[in-house]
Structures are given as structure tokens and as C-alpha cells.
Length: 117
Image (tube, rainbow, N blue to C red; front, side, top):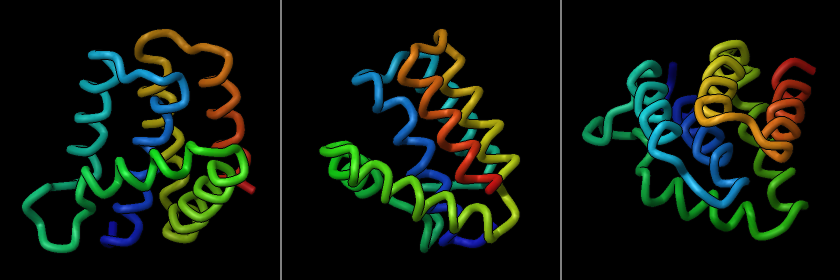
């Protein structure tokens, strides 16, 4: 996975749990496993900085329009790299790790349509 795809992947994964306004301990643990699975490392040159990614996610969640644009951009990068299945799998694991609320289910359905359109 190249750096651009890994960054889009990280940002999309961070967006998912932010939609219900909290990151539970189990979601955080699952997110850490996802980051490890895609080979992300905070020390690798070119890998996404988590503080920067969190800032981008905060900005993206400031309106529905920004959230939609953010999702479209990240899923397009992931889809073009052929990583849609992996992204969808990890999104489902993260969102389902502490039970899936309505907004999380809607997010997952939206992500699925964007990743596989």
C-alpha cells in the first residue's frame, strides 16, 4: 500500500468512530490493530501523522457536506488502489466493536457504496 492510500485509509478509519462523538476503548484497540494491519507506522517517513489526520477529521465533521466530500475523496483513493475490501472490513470491525448505533450503520452503508461503486 503506498503512502497516499495508507493516509486515506487512516483518515477514513479515524472518521468512522468520530461520528458518534466518542472513541471507546474497544474502538481504539480495534483502530490500533487496523493501523498495524495496513503497515502504518508513526516513524515511517511519509506516513500520515495522527494529529494531522485527527485535525482533518475534525474539520470534515463540521458539516454534512464536508463529511461527504471527505469520504468521497478518501474512498476514491482507496478504491483506485484496489483496497476497498480491506477498508470495508476494518471499518466494519471498528464500528461494530462496541455495538453499531444507527449513525454508525449509516456511515458503513455509505462507505460501502463509495468503496464499491
